[in-house]
Length: 315
Ligand code: A3P
Image (cartoon, rainbow, N blue to C red):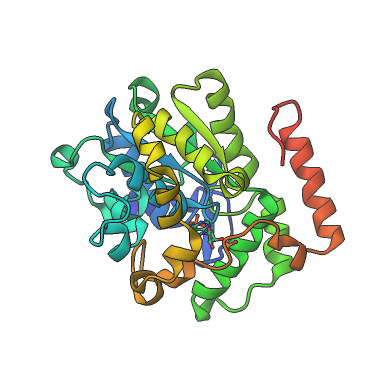
């Protein structure tokens, strides 16, 4: 992509103040940083989904790291038993094991040669469903979408941005961030459109898209894990269930376990150039009560109710 073409494209797009970059742009209906737009253009042009591809999709801070860990553990469990001392999840951050299309594979104008990747290719993205290349819809590849309640997602985004935001961009207040969030201005948002895209497709085509909720995963990890394994084509056998493999994987991938591993405490650069520890904060449900005023809660509740009306999706 030539710099001239790209600069011209950017200058034609609606923009707002960015949280990690000076500006954020509305591209094909969702908000992105310039580097993300560049990668997305490349993905749309050069990524051809195969029938065996397994794609994990989320909006940032809705549990991506967890979903990656669980999926990797499920799909590779014949090769790496969950209690194995050299399990890759003990020494690598989940983002190193399940690459993002936009931050890793197609970042910085690269076009990766994915032909030699072992099958199934376990991949991840923050892109909305509608922005994915046609091959994603037309092949038999499968997508797992993890949604998180929009209140906790906001609080998680806010804290994350606060940690990794370049100092040169100046402070960013919770109020300002919240106002933008409610107007849909967050990375890959509006969030309601992001989740609705995957939700509606999961209703139309349940073999194509599995729609999971962070809160339900927290509540009953083993049950959701079995659902996921079945959907991905790696169902747990009765012997595995009796041997406690499901619980073993759930425990290995738990917030408490992952956050204390050396790689996640001290490591850096699993996604881009920030410390891995920022990917692990509280890992719970309901922290929003400690950060949002009643007025904020009312505003976001009303927006979500209105946007999700009649969809069957609620929080
Ligand atoms: P909090 O900021 O609320 O703690 P993402 O992985 O999409 O960037 O999302 C990050 C959020 O998921 C953070 O939420 C983080 O603490 C939480 N998280 C990370 N690993 C997790 C795990 N293994 N289980 C549950 N939550 C996890």
